[in-house]
Image (cartoon, rainbow, N blue to C red; front, side, top):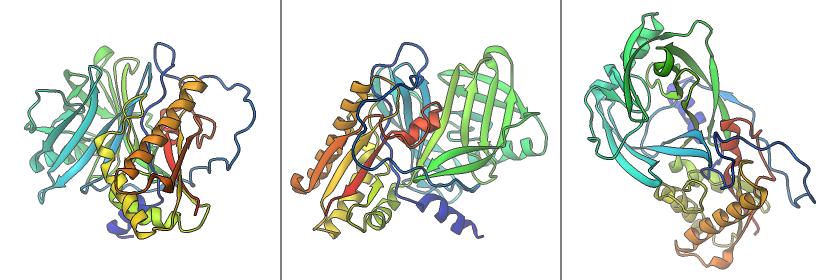
Length: 369
């Protein structure tokens, strides 16, 4: 299969979306879902459909608009950050827009990675900080360089600088002797099984364990743990392509009663505040509505199981209402929409993993007319 065909299948499959993070109310310490407990009266309406059967592809190509969503478990929920590809240079370099929370404030930075560093950089800077220069010579931003990947695949250890959490260390990494060989990542509404190389190095506080996409063209970081017990750990949970949203939404909502997730919707942690990165998804949905003026939509919010039931229900309703307002502000009569939330009551996946919780945090559209 040609590379472009694989990419199209991976990035354009389905009509998935995400809301970000969980409701307040988790216990102090590392976030974890609460134990299962009896429910009251069942929620009326359809049960959330399962995530489609996993597909397998090694390809995640970079193109403008693609957004890589990473998550780390924190006390108040799964904190997410967003790396959006702004542009790609002819020599393989790229420009990113990077959004994360720092000191309780959501901040967005620009980050440029040079083509020479994509090919042979030896410094992996996983997080960016206020005051960092936009371009840091020798560094990569979303994965390891081609040169590092090729050396590791050839069985050679590599001295690689890491910066995660503001602490820089140089670690000799190598392929793990008992490796993880694949991980699942949400791409669109599909759980894609991605082959990885599993690397390990260092010891104690400087121990590093990383899973990188087994693709010499784009060895993307999919999981990174630093510390003897993985105290600092981040995981790619979703890859969105908002530019594909319009076509997939229009197809998915072709019939009355049809439902589809809205991709590329991002919120502040434990809040219903839409992040600016959601603009492309709102614009794509608005274009579909303009092409189908008779459509009326219900907007539904869903959360994971971290936090209390009441808080999750309120958060899901507030997030659905935020999407309704954003669509209305795009020039539509608010009467074309209804909004509601179901909290954690309609999960699509288990809540005991960070990737499962990412699948459950979502906004769905249902065609009423």
